[in-house]
Length: 219
Ligand SMILES: [Zn+2]
Image (cartoon, rainbow, N blue to C red):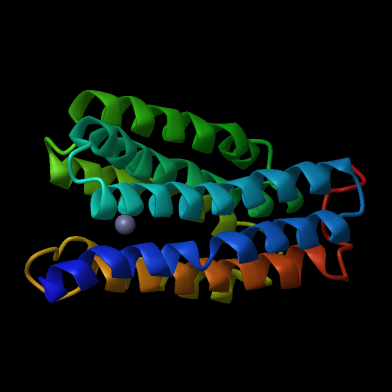
């Protein structure tokens, strides 16, 4: 009984704690913005962060407290999965928007959102049916834009970007180990928080804090 209570409450706690800091982080980047393009980018990235922690918290609270609300839980479970696609797109947005890209690679700016929409359509049609396919979708969306980002002339911050990506990948091991490893889902959340923090640090340091001469804000 106690174990079940811990298992259901821990994931809530880890995500809940990050809702406030996400809003503060979004406001900070917005405040540091030098023009509208940077402001929009800060807003999109910040909303991705806030949405991830907010939706995850609501879903886990429903799972924990309202076990009789199966249909609502199912709906929020889908939202919990969908928000990951948009969170990945939002996490790449500052790099794709504020760094100079080639004429071909610049298409990744909108293509990544198309991938998020495709992932959403998949979730609404095949939620929990083909878990391997779902994982493949997440990994594809996580790695494919990295090809563009790593091809940029300015490589500042790519080390942190890769570190965050590695933390997410290690976390996936726990994400896929529910019922096998004790507290696996809560541990997955900790990895998500760590990776998101590393990525936020890199975005703050290399894209918003001065010097920002390489950004395309004046383009
Ligand atoms: Zn979760």
